[in-house]
Image (cartoon, rainbow, N blue to C red; front, side):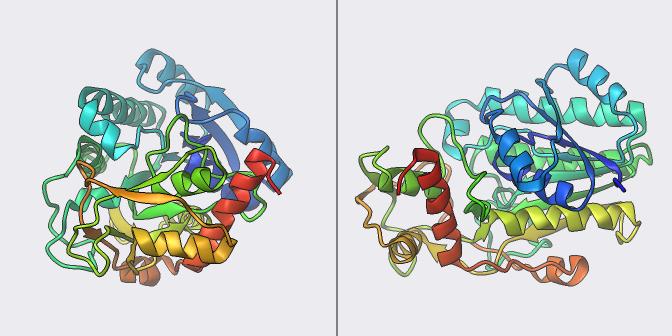
Length: 344
């Protein structure tokens, strides 16, 4: 028997698609809404092939209230919204800040207003470790003071969390919400039927690595080799996208079953381990047997030096823990790239 209807905004995107798979496999009814600006409708066939179920889909720009409201009215029987829809490139946001504020904050406001109008009770937000800026100490916990964001993208995530917290406080809908602060999602579904599919030049490390290995890119540029780290390259907490997607279903069930400890909660999602850019490159070469062509360039504006999570709260409260190793993450990303490019 089907469980509750869940609206997944940005569900044709990288993390949204993997979460849609986990939801469908847990027997939820899934409605995906996406404007396809940074995703492809082709992902829906991958989701269907993995799960044996076809999610409902509507192509829609959530920054347009006049289109958002009728969509939510049609799906007013939904019990929750998982909100992924956002632009997400740190570097691009420093060049196009107004676009990021209009898109990321505008769509959030429209979604939350529609949820209030249609009395949809639960909300899960796709947040980011960028809300921490460069933290004073590591690993960073959910109680760490929020530092000034290092990019407009990070600022939109900080602002969004404040908007959600203040909205939930009013006692109107949504009545409860969880912000999941992702660290660095990489990898692809083990089936290699869905994975990261950036449009144009990738902004994230892993697809640039796999595209370089596949010959799509001539060379991987490593941003900065003069950080105060063991090898001079920036350190991040990389988490497999399927581990991340699984956490969304657990968080959803926490809200649906009323197990949340407060109306608004925040959880870090990472492995709790930091890996440098060079360590990720070496893991890729080791797990795949493919040598990468890479060189070093200047630091990228908006990047912090080192950031990795304390995941104790998610481990304890959600009963969730990341399971995949770095080598498993890099190999799964390569298997997806090979399938995408029809490589042997």
